[in-house]
Image: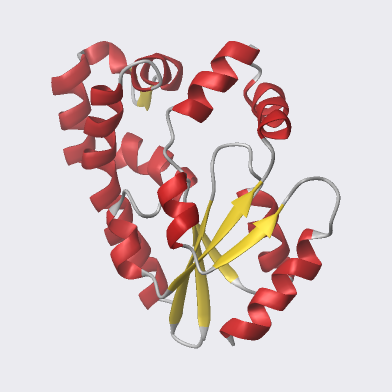
Length: 191
């Protein structure tokens, strides 16, 4: 089984690529969704976040995502800490998930940052999804219902240049070309 990473900055369109892959019958692990779930359910993650940020990081049983986002998008050390706590747990969950798909020849993992995380060690190749900054800002503002400044700070908090440089494939998601056509060309090289 080949494990392929899908990476790119916030608002680049990783979820579009993942949706096309699912429509083509491939299995895609969404590390962002898994991380959100694991931040609520994994005892070690909860304990580390509460120790670092205080009990207010959780609103009852659920992570206060707005509170945490304000911390990690304005403070590099807080972002690094959260990544160091969450990435290993997500990597283990991905391996468990992939092991359950015995008949799959290709599986994919969507992750905003691959090469800063432990996930990079688990993949055979990666696809970088790229989009112009203005399009990314617009997408982030619309999806997160946030200001332009907030969108810029979220984009700036990610170091995607490493992912882009190390990826074997690049897909342009600039609202001009078909993502599916580019993706099929990549799949033909991977299969």
